[in-house]
Length: 319
Image (cartoon, rainbow, N blue to C red; front, top):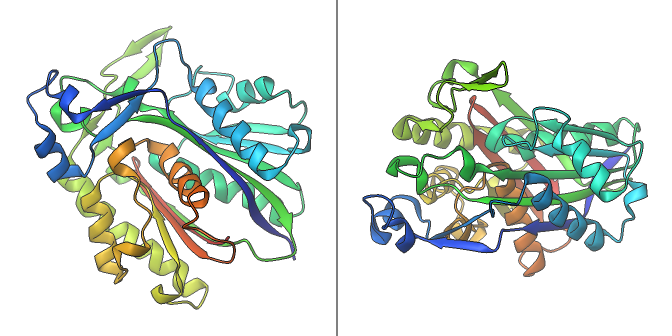
């Protein structure tokens, strides 16, 4: 039986770091107010001349280097993002050209903060069927460009970044299962309502969020989708070495861990220094925890995310 294994990871955060103190000059807020409500202290913002492909390329090359994988070996490039560089072609195709790969499948996935989970699951399915051998999966967003920097309720939350993994076919278990869901009935709870028509933006192009509703849904959905993964694999929470959650809000992360009965010592948290990087947050956290030695070969990992849509999902991985 084919499995897909993670053989390399990479991440990238833009150089510009914006601490909470700088936001105090833009909106009526304070460092303590932001930390108390979100757990965020800093976020990184892309430069005006940086595009999404710039961020994704650095993360992808770092993942390829870590995997000792040549770009010509890649059969599939799938990129989760809400902030593509163009309406079309996909940023995955733009990245493919940058990397010098010719002929592999390449496409974007739009599931907002769940984008990387969706993309990783899709790549895993291609490998499991035997259709491909090696995949490059990226989560990347320049979400700061969808934020109204005068809106205190949203501007404190988001940052920019990119993370990537290389998946390779293996006879040994790697990704054990994935569990994806969506419910469009919540389309207005977290949204950027604008559309593009006749070459112009129609409507409001900034993020709108009903914060309390997002919190309630996220905690419930994330706990349930983790339990779904455990039941499917006949495991309990004590069998999990690390929970690698979407880095949206520390209150959501801690509430989810508590609901699951999982100590925070087994949760990878990078939120304080990055903010919510949308589709990039899980691969960034994964890369950091692998490179600093917390995550070791043989560890069981649960990746989980919830995003606008709502979309949500979990992936159980034996690293």
